[in-house]
Amino acid sequence: MLYNLTTKNQHDEETSQEQLVSIIIPTKNSESYLNECLTSIKQQIHPNIETIIVDSYSKDNTQTMAQTNNAIFIQQKGTASKARNTGIKQSKGKYIFLLDADHMIPPNTVKTCIETIQKNNIEALILPEKSITTSSWGKIIAFEHNLIAEEPSLAMPRFFKAEVLTQLGEDEDLVFGEDWDLYQRFKKQHFKAVVSTEHILHKETDSLSKILIKNIFYGRAFKKLVKKQGATIYRRYTFLPVPTKKFIKHTINHPSVGAGFIFLRFFRILFFLIGVTTSFVRKDNGE
Image (tube, rainbow, N blue to C red; front, top):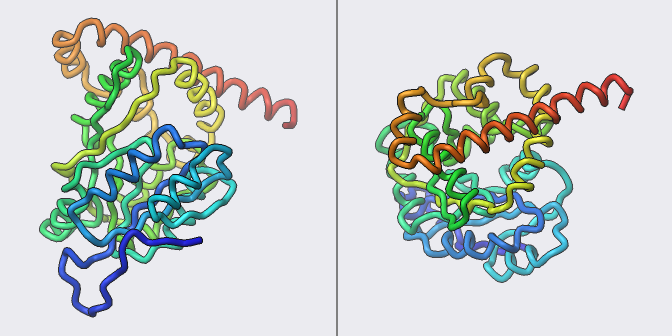
C-alpha cells in the first residue's frame, strides 16, 4: 500500500513552501535506524514532502516502520543505486533528497536546501555529515567524516533538482562509489553544487568487524569504479584523503582519536586490498 507524507499543491505557480520534495531511502534490515530517520523527516518545517523507501526484502520490521510513518514503500532486490533509481522514477517532487536509513536531518534542513538552491541558481547541494556516536570506533569514524567535511571536493551532493537527477541517475552496475561516479558525471555536464549550511546527522556503527567486512566488499567492487572513472577515484580513497597539515591540526586537538584513525585507516586499506585481490582471483578462476 502506498502512502504520502503530504499531498502536492496543484497550483501552476508554487511558492517555495508548496514545492514537493521527494526523499529517497534504500533499506535492508534497517529497523535499528529507520524510525529515527523517518521521525526527523516528519519534523521538517517544510510541509510538502514525500518519503520513498525502496527495500531489499528486509526480514525485520523495516516495512512496518515505513508504513507506520506513512512512507511510500517499494520492495525490490538489488543494490542501493538500483533502489535509488527506482525511487527517482517513482518520485513526483521538484527536488530529490538522497538519504540513508542511518541518517537524520534537523527540522530546518529541507526548507534551507530549497532556499539555497533557488538563491544561488544551482542544481545540487552538498550537506556535510555530523556523526552521532558514543563508541570508540564511532568517534574515530566521526573524526574521518570531519576531515572530509572540510574538503568539499571529497563530499558528495545529496539534494538535487529532480530534472537533473532524473537525467543522470546512479550507475546500477556500481555497488561501491556510485555517489562519487554520479558527482563526476554531474560536473561533466557543467552543473553546479555548493556546500550547504545545513548538515546530515549520521549514526555510526560501533562494530569494527562490520567496518572491515564492508571494506572487503568495496575492494571486490573497486575494479568497475576505476575502469569507469580512472585515476580521479584515488584521491577519494587514498590513505590520507586530506592535506597533511589539516590532519596534523585535527590530531593535535584529538591525539588519541587521531592515532585511532591511523590504525583504522591502515586496516581499512588492508581489508580493501584483500577484496581487490580476491576479485582478481575470482576472475582467474572463471567465477
